[in-house]
Every structure is written in structure tokens, then in C-alpha cells.
Length: 274
Image (tube, rainbow, N blue to C red; front, side):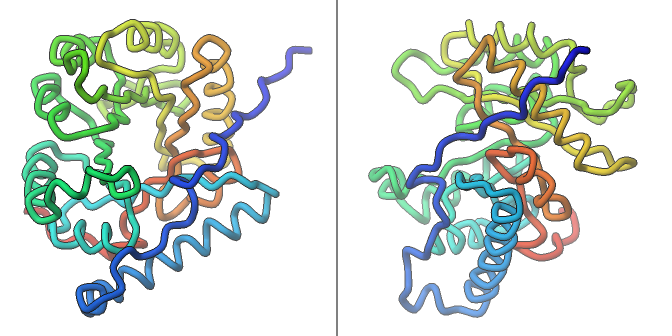
């Protein structure tokens, strides 16, 4: 009988993946919004702690706070509270926000490794936005088709510049429908991975997925872990598993997610779309 691959082994624990603490305990960290964010962050990290304990997991997944529709001021507050990874899924908003945050924090935000703010683009990306995203993002979680990859290769950073870490977004529905929701068929992973790995200026990070709306999250994340294990047989460096949001982070932690994408439970309900 054929056996499934072992679930993915997450990244080893490191100082960067430890539970973060505030870097600013002065007046700026005491405004009501900062206090609200600090309390919400603590609650999310408590959930992660409990999820890890439930499965005996030692390595801590990295929390990416999704800041879509929230102002640059909140990103700055999060940075002062110890957050170093934020996610966006609309290029026009993200590009402007990243520039505004950089202007507020200054070059010091990137001068020391512990202070670097990493931008993760997690939404569906049009091919004509590839060059723009490369300008500010460290990670792109949504590579799911050949046409986008071609645009990324064409716009890829030059040697000596910061490479773009690419994750392949996988559609975990079975069968995979053609409804434009984003995500590659699992059968396409090997080809996309090989092309990313061979592309100058791009780095293959791993896999990303969103649990299907119409099905339980746990089986989907179990499948993602299996796909990650298969990928790492050919690309052992591609250890990232980006999975889990506010409603299903426990299931993602249980099945090896290395990166969690949480917005609502940190920042609150999103403002009306602008």
C-alpha cells in the first residue's frame, strides 16, 4: 500500500521566530491604539502557544500581520510592538504604504537585522504589477501561473540586490475548479518550483495555501504538508509553509505551518474598502 509522505518539518526555531516583544515602551507605545494592538497580539500569540503545546511542537511559526486597508500608522505601531513581518494583498495600497512607513521609520528600520520590517505580498497578483511588487516586497506568496512567473523573471532584482522569495500558491480543492480564486493545481508545483529555483534574482521559499471555504481546514493543511514534503525532496531549501489565518491558525500550526497570516484578530475588523 502506498503511504503518504511525512508531514513537513517546519523551520528550526530561531531568534527571529521567537515570540516578539515591544521595542518601544515609551509614550508612543502607550496610546490607546497601540495598547489595543498589544493586547490583540498577546492574545494571538497565546493561541499559537496553546496550538503548539497541543501537538508538542517546539519551533514557533512566524506571525505575519496582514495590514490590508489599515493605515501606515498602524504598521509603525506594530513595528514598535515587535512585529517584523506584515502582509498586503493589493499592490497599489501596499506600495504607497511601504513608502510611507519607510519615511516614518527611516533607514534605521533596516540598518540592524533585528529591526528589519519584512513586507509579504499575499494576494493575487497581475503580471503587470510584478515590477512594482519587487520594489518593496521581500516575499511573494502567490506565484500560481506561468505568465506571472515570466513577468517576475523579467523584472527580477539584479545581482547584489535583495532577491525576491517566492512561494507557490496551491489550490487545495479537489478537483481544482477554474473560478479565478487563485492557486496552482498541485500537479503544476514541480514545474513552477524548478523555474523559480533557476531564475536569477528569485528564491524558492516553499508553498502557500488558503483553506477551502466549503471544507474543514485540517485535511487541506494536511495535504499542504504532504505537498511540501514532496517539494523538499527536490528543493530542500523550500521549507516555508504559509497557511492559517485568524479562523484556522490552530489547524495550520498542527500541520506544520511555518508562517501564519493573521489580520482581523490583531487589527480588528477591516475599515470599509477605499
